[in-house]
Length: 134
Image (cartoon, rainbow, N blue to C red; front, side, top):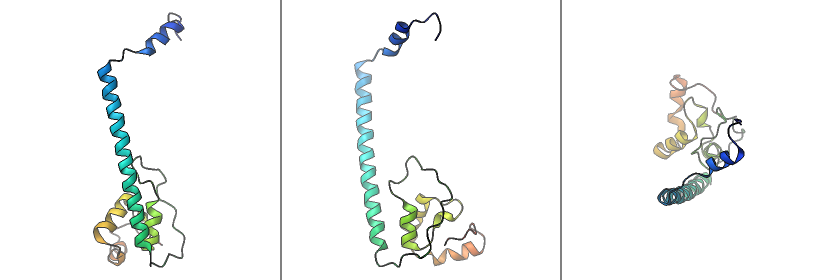
C-alpha cells in the first residue's frame, strides 16, 4: 500500500458510484443468464435420458473405456459424461480419433446414426487417427 493512501481512501475508492439504471441492467442480465443456464441444464438432462434410452438392448462393451485424450472440462460442456454414454451405446470411443471431442462425437452420431462400420475404412486408410478405439 502506498504511504500516501490511507485505509479510508482505499475503502472509499472501492465503494463506487453505482447508478440505478446500471444496477437494473446488471440485475436483468444476471436473471437472463441464470434462466439460460437452467434451460441448458434441462436440455442436457433430456440428451442424457435419450442416450440412456438408446443404450437399452445394446450389449455393453467388454473392455473398459479408454483414457480420455483431453482431460480438460469445457466451460460449456455437457453436465454428464458424453464419452461414457456414447461408448456404452457404440462400443467404441469416438473421441480417440484426433480432433473429435465429446460434442463432435455426439453430433456425428446424431447426424449419421450409430452404425460406425462406415467409419472403419477411414481409420484403416489413415484418413483418421489410427488410435485403437476399443
